[in-house]
Length: 632
Image 1 (cartoon, helix red, strand yellow):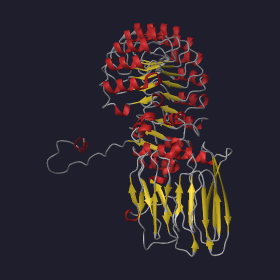
Image 2 (cartoon, rainbow, N blue to C red):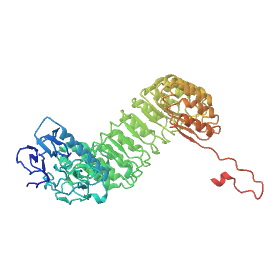
Image 3 (tube, rainbow, N blue to C red):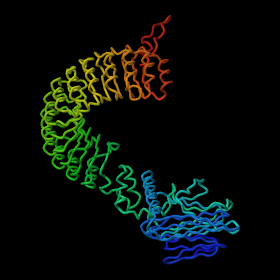
Image 4 (tube, helix red, strand yellow):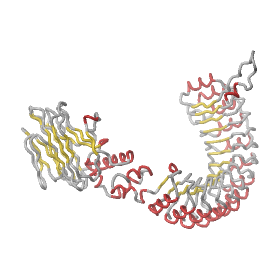
């Protein structure tokens, strides 16, 4: 089918030809097409290259696209000048040595992925007519890779009006100047627009899809191998995958393929997740699933976990924290089928007992991380069984487990010498003997939390300074027996300390800060809240150290009664300081805080100033409550 005079044509054949007034350019291949005077014809090969023709009154623009069936192409521009006439031509030839069309293919696919992940459905087609007396029609074959034809008239003397199909030529317009229609990715219908009288004749007609995607983008996507599409989908999150699955049948199959669901985090849907959802996911993902987070899914029960373990044998990371309905039956199923498990989180699962740790010890020898915080039924017996069977253990957390004692820590030190992270926060019965043995047998220890272990003394700190030189995080909040002697030893030997929590270590003085300032050059975060003996001189020592100027970012000084405005003056030299806590520091004034923020405009200052004393009542009945009580 041929386009009439003064029109442009886009067809799906393997060749293209162009002729116009004084100059013409043509290319022939399998099944050639031709047009009359003042017309343009563009045809795409099996790779469905994108062609764009632009008109200028005094230029002949020739764009040559060389593409093969693999989607490789090369574009070369050449300009020809003529008097009073202009024409436009597009020539498509086979070439195996260029990559521009391949780049367009990848770019088009990525943009379509973005649109689908953002809007959740196939994007609508926007048809924008040029400001001229013109008409255009577009048609597509049933397979989505067919032919399209357009027609229009030119308004200049001897120039041909061309139709440009470009994803970058989108220009927002008012609703009365454009039409929008929804087209599925594999839909085949014709769209036509009537002429738009009374508009500028120099603008080119455009047919393009929403957010700059052309119909050719969808065809380019289909040429990518399935493996490439699956690889791209593997980087999307759950919400984006579900949206992509609604675009078309082809994308539905790819988006719901198990290989795209290797890592799933359902925390955002915790209130909606029930047993059938988990069972459906496990049956779909099967051996592909490697990481699953079900944190906070309180409707989850043992039956769902059993189905999950039965289908997903290759799972490595499993988060079941705050799943309050699961019991030892769940961990029994996990240990039986998920032998490749390396990390499990059972935080705040109140029904988990020592039996769970025994099951994991027998069935998961590769386990490296486990969190049983606030599982009050865990005792030293379960920890001992775990340590004997999981010798590769690197991280162990039992925060709030009151039954964890020295024997449990000694078993970890004896059977798991590679342990790097230990959190025994609020395990109140732990003493110096177990910490000293842990320090001696676990030289790779990097993070230790013994907060609220009130029986510990400086002997533990000295043992850590002697054996654990790689220590970078130390949390000892509430250890009231620690003094300057222990922290002096740490400052002398532990050069890699970055974070320290010394809250309520109320025996330390400015001397501790002086040792840390000189011995710990990488200190980033320091908590000194409720350290009532810290004064302005201690902060001065800290700010003159090697860590303060460029490294120190967080300093907490809540309830330090001896801290005054001089402290804030010293902190001006800490250029990287981002946050400072000053709650209940009675000697700090608003004026000093304003001066600090003038020097460090990005700093966040958290402070509280008690309301002023209410004035005395001179007459009348005395109020029942003071002003502060009325506010409360």
